Image 1 (spheres, helix red, strand yellow):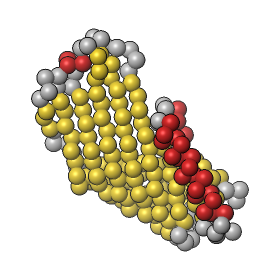
Image 2 (cartoon, rainbow, N blue to C red):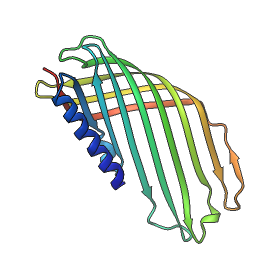
Image 3 (cartoon, one colour):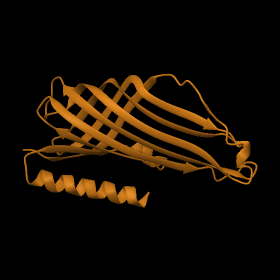
Image 4 (cartoon, rainbow, N blue to C red):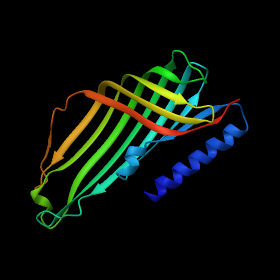
Length: 193
């Protein structure tokens, strides 16, 4: 987790350095609701023109159940990475207001049990790659404050979902091909005029 936070900080500083040397605009956002639950999800939206932008988001979610059940503890890890291409219909401050998007998403998740009775439970792992379309709305104030909310749906092109029981037997489940991509971000716009 510390390595990820350091990487995110270095990414933001690099983007800030780049923006200061050009007229580029970059909207850097973080998901405030995820922070409440210990999940870190950051995004950088690169404004290409008044009507177009490309955004990349990356997140990390970790957790464990400290209340052991039958002397076993659960651990969770999730890594979503999404790239959005956005088209804005009537921007006021450039790349803001109502937009539609197309997205590609990679998600890796795992849920494991550890401890003496861990073999009584089933471990879960999933890797998915998919794409789809969505809608959203971004507000950019004159002072540079950014609020971005959006939702999209699509389908998985690659879906590797497996379960492993305590005896080491693996089995797969036909998971629905539908995927969702949501966006909730608050942040700041760097660069521009």
